[in-house]
Length: 184
Image (tube, rainbow, N blue to C red):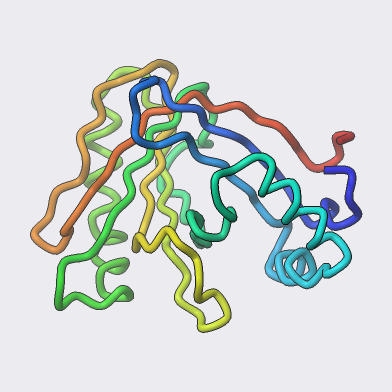
């Protein structure tokens, strides 16, 4: 975080699994200030060696191999709250990614209304996986990520539709680590 490239980042948080037996180790969330900042962050060759060494020390494999880049669509609420529930979604065979994401957006209002009936609901957003050629090589190949925010752990059902082939859920505790304007 002390590197110059960190000026491109708006927020950074970790989300640690509530269930210690979870097959997921957690979720790291990184928000860029804007698209130009994302490009500048990635283009910073000076920090690349430091970051690769840090990843090798911290993780079992390079972060890119288990990451995806999404465009966030806020559906409801401000996203605050100490608990985050993620559902990683994959499309059914024969459904294109753009069509899948459009269908998911079409389902968003009903999904928001269903989750709002569960106590402690604070917000819902959709992370729609980006599909540009420059982004090839990300290892988490899901098509979308539903993220809901909660006051406390809640039984959150995964969205269901015939065009959703797979949904993997993870309940986490949200730990903010960086906010623009703070010191590393």
